Amino acid sequence: MKKISLFALLLITPLFIAGCGGDDEAANNSSGSAENADKLMYETDNFSLLFPKDWEILESNSFTSNVPQETVVGLRNNLKSNIFTANINIAQTALEQEQTLDSRDFAKSSLAEVKKSLVNFNQISLEDYNLTYGDEEIATYISDLEGRKTASEPTIHFKQLHIVNDGIGYTVTGAYTPNEDESVVTQIEETLKSFQLK
Image 1: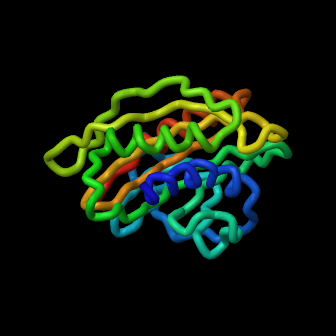
Image 2 (image 1 turned 90 degrees about the vertical axis):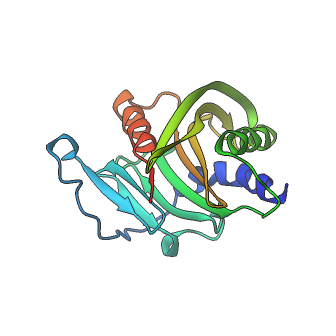
């Protein structure tokens, strides 16, 4: 259960990334299609996803010390806000061998821990979602929730995708204020749904 408790911390990573400085951009290629001309691809050996071309990439070497080690990358809206800047982060964690969680169990366990860590937690929805990986589909959820890090901080809206593959749990989290521009919310949703395992 130690690893599952970590996911509560990973949920609040976007709260830290919203304020991280740095202009450390990785070399990314555009997706190549006219349909995705306004997007770039971020990829590692394990996964890839498309994100808005004008968003900033924050690699682990530019994170502040309070961002969990499991966070691979942060993507931040180029339109900064004094209250909270919309962002997305991807974390990957090796699950303990005795944990035989599938992606849906992983999502539910993570949400149970998050509920304990946020003030005024509110789960808005839990959408069935299937991620295609090679010839198979991985059944999981996209969760929609909101809460506050502390009682004095603003409410933040979160969208999360949880995937388990080969003993690694991936958590993709988008975060924004409830009154965020609808186009930014759409960009976050599209980015989450573009996540692909390699």
